[in-house]
Image 1 (cartoon, rainbow, N blue to C red):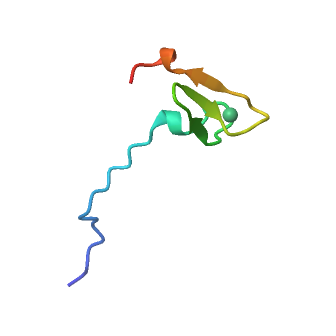
Image 2 (tube, rainbow, N blue to C red):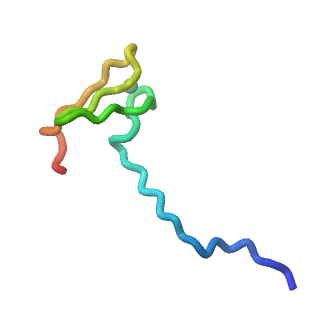
Image 3 (cartoon, protein in one colour):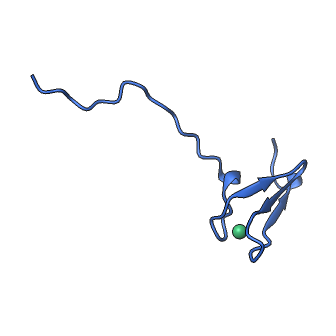
Amino acid sequence: MSRSDSSTTKQEKQENWWEFCPVCGSKLLNHKCRIVCSNPQCQFFMSCSEFDL
Ligand SMILES: [Zn+2]
């Protein structure tokens, strides 16, 4: 019997797009109503008005 490597535990990794900066790929810091890139050289940020939560 060959043991099949089937993953029974399906762990859905929901990759939140707001988790990482679309520009540099750094981790985004979630503030109250703002998402800021953790990369100081990037200075990418988004206000919550850009998306609906
Ligand atoms: Zn960035």
